Length: 460
Ligand code: ATP
Image 1: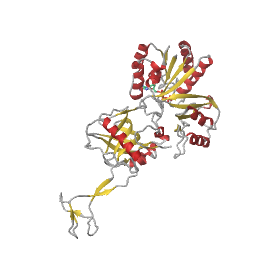
Image 2: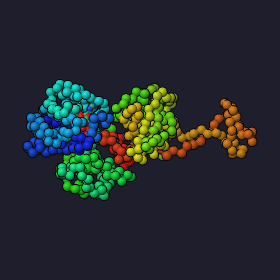
Image 3: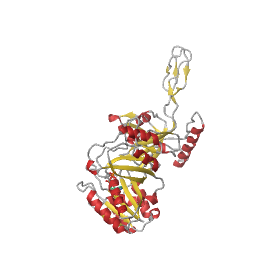
Image 4: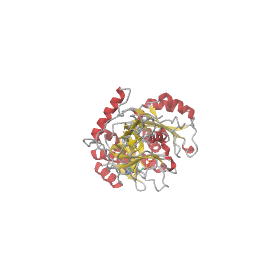
């Protein structure tokens, strides 16, 4: 088998799209009588600064011979890749006689690191040469990083979803897209939940239709290839020039790693559990900030927290009244500010409802020391608050009797040594909450896909 990896052929302003170019390469290969068994669309670290939009790279698994693969790819990259944008830096990697399931370990590791961390071109070229792969570059060939990661992806990853992409007639690119939104909303409703993130019902937005220039008319995502193609077939639109179905790591949360507050690094995405230390604050622009502090459990391990989280999820499912997670001995040593940006829309209402003392698991990328929330799970919710005691005789609020001397009712002479407890009405429950489809990152997992360790509140 020949594996073709390709990346960085497009431009933010001029359009194009590496998936389109790869689709043309696949068609040209099929026109020679060879087959293309698999088209992979791999999302890499979303915090890479050079990305055009969603940091995607492509791999094609084919039986065409490597010289023909190189000829076809070169011809099409040279005719379609954007070459008047200094940011565009195409790269091509071809693995000869390779089994996509068992590429060498260094390529598998390279793929993992490309999804969760950063590489240099030198890292990529060293491993490409060690593996004996063919490679080509245009304008610096930074795309070889993504191309090599895509070559290693099938062996590196185990969880896959799919996207069916329809492309416009090429000469229409740059004009407004003619797609009937009613047909999209109806088709999306019929195939939900195996097809997800097609629309955002509350925002009334067809999120499957991009707004950026480029050849994509729409992309339908889901867990079932037949279902995503059914949705595509039911959409009324301008003519479709060609289409392609990709297997992808979109919607899998593969970018997230377990983290500990106090040792989070910029440019990485984490899943961290901590305690809210002050009430959420809405700042200019409508962005909602809330600080999360490191939490210590008895034995100081993350494993213990996640075990407790799983237990709390089970408890939640089997009882009508949820029992909050009891985490003994917590204290704080360090904090990270979490933010729900304005474009996350209604997600902010859940974030605003967090209270001091709540324990949450927050997921998102850390940038400039701030965790950009993609989803969170409420693990433990504060149910009471302290307040000044009420006099049992006259029902009026007592007054302070002086520093450390409790409270007293001056009229009745009654006294109380402590503040009283008042129960808090909580709208949040012990669940996962997420940003809506209109604000979803390509790689982030929608809650509706399941396998979470607590009940979920999916957005659609
Ligand atoms: P599109 O979504 O339109 O395909 P894009 O968002 O994928 O565009 P690219 O134009 O492909 O963006 O640019 C991303 C660049 O970053 C590529 O050159 C790719 O090789 C490189 N890259 C990807 N992941 C990493 C990483 N982890 N470290 C360093 N560079 C990376």
